[in-house]
Length: 323
Image (cartoon, rainbow, N blue to C red; front, side):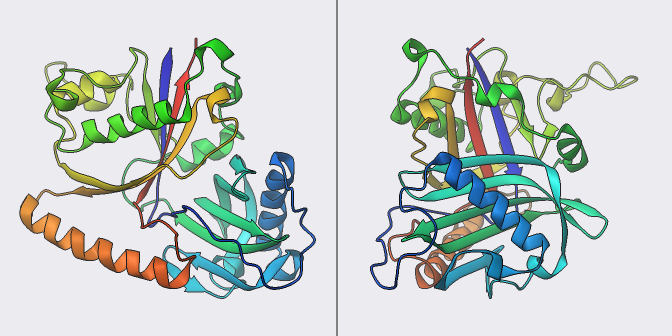
């Protein structure tokens, strides 16, 4: 069994939860029983419309809500005006049961390749919510955006079906993902609950923004007696307490009830991580609480009444691999 962690660092992130379907207005052209293929096709339509700078190419509700990195905009504004092309990398997550689809992929803006996450919500045959998040080179943290783009697609292992007898339930996968965040928070090397261990296989590998942050060969000429954290595996990093600066991981959300999640062993998570160096944990927690409250208020105001609170500056995928 093998784990792969993939993270897309972003300036803001989406949240989703339980929704109450709108009952007003006529039914739109999108099939009411929009299945996985249908939802994935909507992502292609959305990207084409963005690059064409033409929202009229989409089936939008009259009251569609659109945001970029927390900012509420009119559809057609913001990145819609500057997008110059669709990149080569695209990873789509479709949830037919909830009528939602999300994508992490590369896009073009002038001569720059950037990372984009977008979520579409479909109700009564029309798109009612669009949340988009962007990360550009120089945005902080490791990244290999050009490398992701050149790869052209996610690794094949993301799409391999796990034998039925080896599949985990969605609840079990969520527990594993949550265990990762519990171990990352105030990482002291003692394991979850003092158990001495963390939920990793021996060949676990983590990738952030397309850049490996584990199992990276030590650079030639680098002193062998020093700690090269990125050369370690997932378990070794956590047991070393490498992420001790992460003081709090809260607003953890596992919103995607992906019908085939157990078949592929994938979980989509949204969290908010607070890292502190210069300020005390007490002061940081205080400012974080206020910030979280403001974000929650913003989301309640602009999105569906039961939309979950936000969210983190990082998207995580946890895949349980079978080898």
